[in-house]
Length: 94
Length: 135
View 1 (spheres, chains in turn brown, cyan):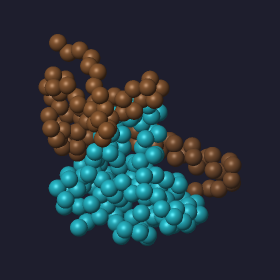
View 2 (cartoon, rainbow over the protein chains, first blue to last red):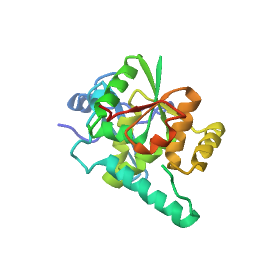
View 3 (cartoon, rainbow over the protein chains, first blue to last red):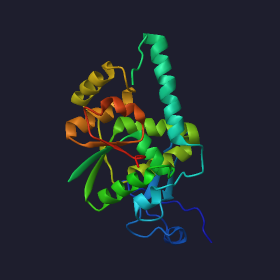
């Protein structure tokens, strides 16, 4: 059974992740974790990143999960260009 | 060693396995094996980050950011020279401000821009461009 634990931060800022939690989540030495500071909730979340090849892990990680991000980027650029034109009278020639 | 500068478009295409992203994947694999160097401007990082925040919310975007930072890319900070060079490109009026930093970085490092964004067509005389969606 996994329970919350209280751990003490060392002078170097290190905290030991309990062995049972590491085992349950496959957090073996050398694997990467994400450390996410969440100031709103006054907590730090540690998320194991899984596979060790970051390229393999990242390729298509958002495929099909959200509408096309490249399309959103291009829409943003169109909005930015329109804003520049309106505010400064600058027209992008490209 | 071959030197490349990825833009936001190329990285977002990679994350979603969109058309042409296989080329980005190949380059990043080469970078992981130390056969190429891939640079990424911190201005582009900010651009990708806000697109991710809008699409996913802050919490999930932060997780994606960690995945991005783990990729074998050299994050390139903004320095005065790159700001001024980017400003010169921006003055031409044919490109977004963030992309000016991509061009400036590629010119300064003699690197090839990797993108699928046609806005860069205006800079084909300034830098080599690898179009990810080219046949």
